[in-house]
Image (cartoon, rainbow, N blue to C red; front, top):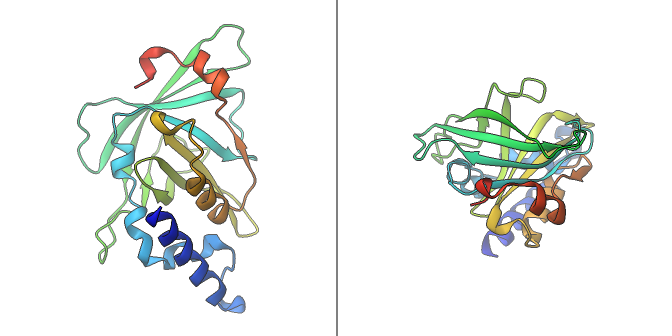
Length: 206
């Protein structure tokens, strides 16, 4: 809860104080000025976790076909900074059988900020259609929010929201508040509990 208030107050302080004619006055434009919350923009701990991750939100305009119940699992027992190897799994709803599809990916943490010793973005070459650089909006032990820069319209940026399995059915109101504040592009919900409880195999759940 303290984290929630810190991020919220920092954002609400910087946003109104911006001079309209000299800034991007969407909340997304203030993100890099919020030095108070850099500690919550390092995604290494979340992404290197052995927990199964679930994709909750994506920008509504981002086309992923009939993919549903998207999860991510670790491919190596002990990731070595700055790289983490994960596997993305999903069910293609256009197929009659529940045939899970897999894609192996490698994520690399960006260079650490000199002052705060934190990485505030990660890169990957495994999704060229979506992008290669993904700035982190927020990360903690429960959720990860990052920007998808190619889903930017009128200064508003779309984001992805991932959560750990243990939190996937919790309200996580603070994560969703931060998502809605900094991610101005309309989103869609990718995760549906009843469907995914059935479609995600036991070996993916941890």
